[in-house]
Amino acid sequence: MCGIVGIVGNSPVAARLVDALRRLEYRGYDSAGVATVHEGRMDRRRAEGKLFNLEKKLDAEPLPGTIGIAHTRWATHGVPNETNAHPHFVDGVAVVHNGIIENFSELKDELLAEGAVFESQTDTEVVAHLLAKYTRQGLDHRAAMLATLNRVSGAYALVVMFEDDPGTIMAARFGPPLAIGHGRGEMFLGSDAIALSPFTNEITYLVDGDCAVMTHKGAEIIDYDGKPVKRQSQISQASAFMVDKGNHRHFMEKEIYEQPEIISHALSHYIDFATHTVKANDTAIDFGKVSGLAIAACGTAYLSGLIGKYWFERYARLPVEIDVASEFRYRELPLSPSQAALFISQSGETADTLASLRYCKDNGLKIGAVVNVKESTIARESDAIFPILAGPEIGVASTKAFTCQLAVLAALAIGAGRARGTVTAGDEKAMVKHLAEMPRIMSRVLNDIQPQIEALSRELSRFKDVLYLGRGTSFPLAMEGALKLKEISYIHAEGYAAGELKHGPIALIDEHMPVIVIAPHDRFFEKTVSNMQEVAARGGKIIFITDEKGAAASKLPTMATIALPNVDEIIAPMIFSLPIQLLAYHTAVFMGTDVDQPRNLAKSVTVE
Ligand code: F6R
Image (cartoon, rainbow, N blue to C red; front, top):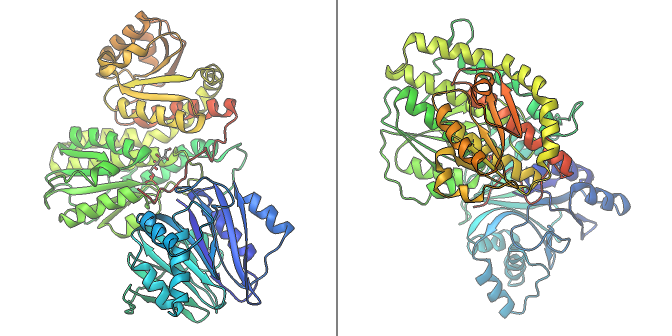
């Protein structure tokens, strides 16, 4: 949430700051802004909405200067307008901020009582006011920064610049990520290494409680008492290459169609295609010995974890405690060091997931990260990294990261089963063979179902509410289908366990509520069909996502039946993800929404 950048440069920085912001737009796109200092004067350009609005402003009114800071915003406090856009200026101090200053309201009251005048409704502005106040009281900039950091609480990454010191940028991290980039006679700061990749690949990650003072000569890192701390720099693998959409209309469409190839690549890391066995990845977690697993994640990543729970319990006989990370972190769940914990996150920066990780770490559990961004905070704080190798996911709605997470979890669960003696060599071979065949089946499905889904999406776009039902691993998939549809088409949708229908949601069924039933012909099929009967008996419209066997077995009238190839249970969740992703995508396209950057969302959620 919110992307921040800073450059202490030798040549004009405004265009470079915007280039870095473009790489951070996934973190928010409510507004953007840039500030520089030139010839002793600090100035800024800010614009509501996406980055191109700021670029237009900068074209009309360029911003000279070789030092500057910039921000792309995901609004927390205050509406997304130009006044609330960062950088915030107070008396020669400029601040950009990612996160939430939790005690901003008491600080604001104190500052107001002292006569401060606030321009914006943001929490960030208190930081600029505190810095200005301490500077007025005679503290030098470093002391003012430390005094300010000792007053604010919450989660923040802050970058600060002073009009009367055009050779220094200061920064602090407590929660959201912040990376220092080391250039030749120039220094950079950014929310991630990708933002800085065009400028340098030598990166130092700040950790919580670090304050950095950056000049042309380098970065000095101190704690909030001003004591020097040492942080190692590393060579980042982040690529400066900007991903494009290829022939696709949206990144989301491209990412859906990329899945067969990407999953094949991801699987090659975990399974041996020649012997049809799970590779014994030497990691800090011995799934053969642990007494149980704890899993925490958010949104789509949580739903992949929920499917993982079914697999770990069924195949490895390993009990799994799973929750959305925002609840997990506060549950005070009793844990034992004999358990291991897995944290699933595309970005590797999700605040609640990271807090849950730290809770488990404090309880002595071994930590595994199922992440896409290998240099992320969650990856760095884990004992074992299980990369999902999905490549950059640009569409805000997660698609390929979800199926890659599933592929990795499936391989881990089979491997755990082998290690625990609950999966025989024959079972392992059979399941791994199915995984190996999956990319080919995915390609076929994507090709075959597209016209039917597109036509169906036109009809679906006319409804206001949609219910998704599933049993077993199709239950989390029902929730994922509903999440995907609501986040990009803005149609209200809910996912339910099919067996729960008659415990409440059945009251909603009428001809205005399509019910999407996800039911491969598996051991739950008959039971799910009974639930479909209950919908049909009440005039509900059914969209039946099943396989060829299921389509042949059910005689119920449907609004549409999507019949996928018959596949083994272990790969069904990945295969059945495809129609639900495409259905959400095409429905959103018909509705004319901003598919890749839906309203109010951000790709990386670094606040609670
Ligand atoms: C939905 C979606 C979100 C993310 C969630 C967690 O399409 O993308 O629900 O899954 O915000 O993000 P990560 O995986 O980065 O921790």
